[in-house]
Length: 209
Image 1 (tube, helix red, strand yellow):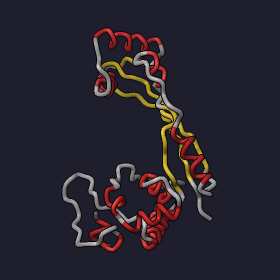
Image 2 (cartoon, rainbow, N blue to C red; image 1 turned 180 degrees about the horizontal axis):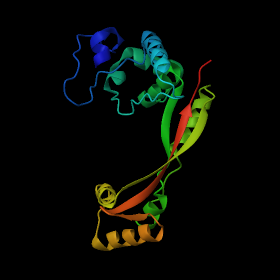
Image 3 (cartoon, rainbow, N blue to C red; image 1 turned 45 degrees about the vertical axis):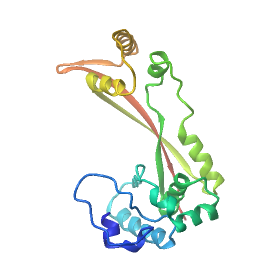
């Protein structure tokens, strides 16, 4: 919203915007159908890249609502011209054309066996493989780098996350605890039990010439 407040013409439907003074997500976002938006973002990211020594810049934007794009003639025209599947594909295209980083997709949450053994769920094929193939079909020779993150979280926090998605019973929780212990994931600390977690993320990126 801060960008649109300063540059309202970058919106799908320009008007007088105000910056948000509370937490939240606005339906008004940058227009992906306007070439001037792409040019503006290229300039922005070029300046940001000079400020930091890291190889990557995380664009984010995964929670961006697409209501404006659905009704915007500029965005719909670009979707039709590029032969894209829809608004989500339009965001992927926008990410690629504005900088080096495409996105980060989950490769393995490190809990696949828990989902299968305890909850009877089979994890689908990792999304990053599909996205990588789509990029190549669009003519963008992307690169993939898989990164591993090892960390620990409090047991009660992990149980709370699982309870929010599954109908827990005392018997199911006991099976889960036994499985976590048998798989070497439980760690005892002075402040209670913690759970070892290992995440693998796939960074899919495309460096423009």
